[in-house]
Length: 69
Image 1: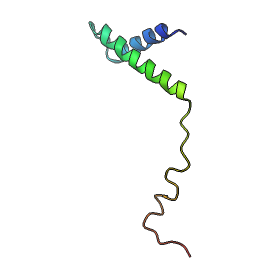
Image 2: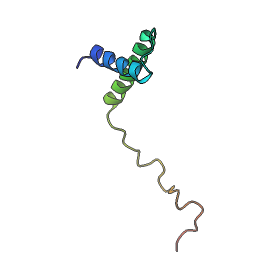
Image 3: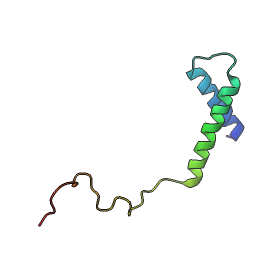
Image 4: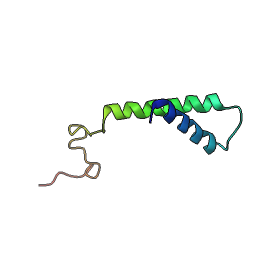
């Protein structure tokens, strides 16, 4: 599906979700564009993989616990 069609469908979904108000076509279109672009950015970056170095040794269950001997 091309980008314009995806935006059109998303704008329609937004319009329906908001109760089909009249006169807000531009607002719904702009919101759809933002959402589709955000999804595209996520797709281009790929899946988020946690950095193994972040939080190493900081298990929240062990905070304040005495070291085991």
